[in-house]
Length: 56
Image (cartoon, rainbow, N blue to C red; front, side, top):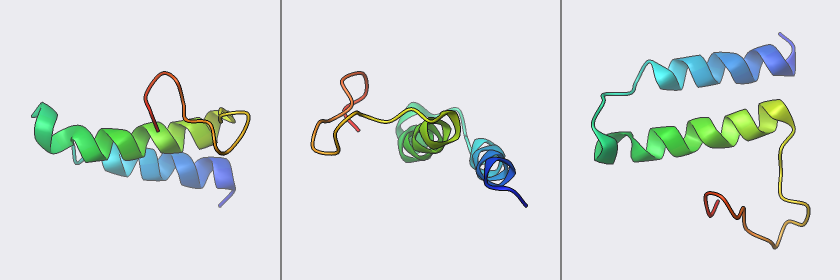
């Protein structure tokens, strides 16, 4: 399985775990966001600078 497909499979699996409760879904949504950033090639320019939009 190519990396793109593997990342998408992980995202889909995490999305299936969402409950609709904001507080219990927070960690899952954070993981989904991080995987989507990898999938789309979006990363902060420098590793010591935090992502401005989400603080990751």
